[in-house]
Length: 601
Image (tube, rainbow, N blue to C red; front, side, top):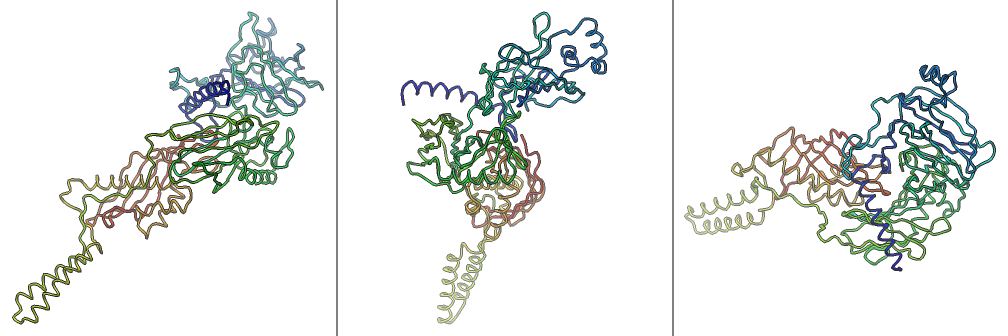
């Protein structure tokens, strides 16, 4: 790698890391990608432009108090119905400002056609943290206007049979040459988002790629969407598993699965199934992964479709038709591990005239790090720099505050003492010898059977209340149960539960861990439990034998990273639980979830 490329790589990594950090701090959506909120998405007025094959459609949400600034869009006969005062003013003095216009590069405006207008509520586009303080800047995150009502205006700017290579979007300007009012705008080219939401306060020049709208872009790079690459790779290094995940746009995937997808292609369910199956087969053997210096094969390969829209990248579930231009195949390849390796690497081998630069995000418990693969340098490696990391493990919970009485040993000791007493009282030598041997045998049997049939009893002088003992014991059992949930397969998760679950209850507890205790994220993957808090016993009591049956509640915070999205969940559980001491350790004998609430953070 050349010094120049190394420096460029470092600068881009730093910039990308900061962007990721901001996104992670700001939180994430349950279904969508992290979207950088600029405030333009909650401006008083919203203009959404949609480039179509024969023109540009404008969808305008006008804040009622700003209606006068957009009166030029309305025909005179309708203007009177929507705002009589503005209609009278326009008739007397003309429009207060020029209209929004779309212009060819040569300066000629596109023909204008009014389509419709109506009263409606604005589309909610605000950040989930709207109104709160931005953790990076300290400023208040913008919220939409309190009045949700807008006047919706739809208009169409026609090409009149001549498609332009460049378009200029011009905001309305008042006669004093100052912006009329705040307008947030976004542009789509044949359903592909070209921009993120920005303020529409100056001319914006768009170069259109008619062969593939993905490559249409504004000359002002600050306006363009943040997702620029149609193919991205993610290497997740997690406890028990390394995952290689890929997002690839269907138009870029098509040549690798012997398909041809043109602009505007819509895919029915049958075509979707064929494409996803072909993608799974192709990626199972492509882009080799090495762990600890050895090439490995995935134990599972699964996938889903995702779409890019106004709300970012979202998993497409139950969508009957998908547009090839905005749809991605998301692939997940799983490589189980027992402990974190010293290194892991991907060698990207799917380069062609379209795929020449593949961003790769490497993520471990310390956070994300960005790199990329190019034809001259296709290998990207993760190096283990985690000095204080400790692999989580299932820990047995030692019994405290309970004493165990070995019944067989007690009976053997009683028998031995009785035989010894009989030997002392017997007058015949032969009987004394027999009772003595019986006493000795009883003592030997007592020692041999000391671990068999132990009956637990709560220690009345343990110095810990029953409530404390129950709560602490269940907290530790629950924590170890969630560690067992880190395993990659159901069989491995069931095996990991063995130290903390009785043999008789193992199948039922394992089934509960797979279903009601599992937290799923979009795409079907399991979230990892980051924290368990507020564990409390709400019903039940510990018996004299140490066994507990009752109802417990707790809260878990879970997260999962997939395809660059940071999904988070908070779930409040209420469950019937049972556990008891067995040979010096506590073991679960049952857990049944009764209620799980508030699944989203």
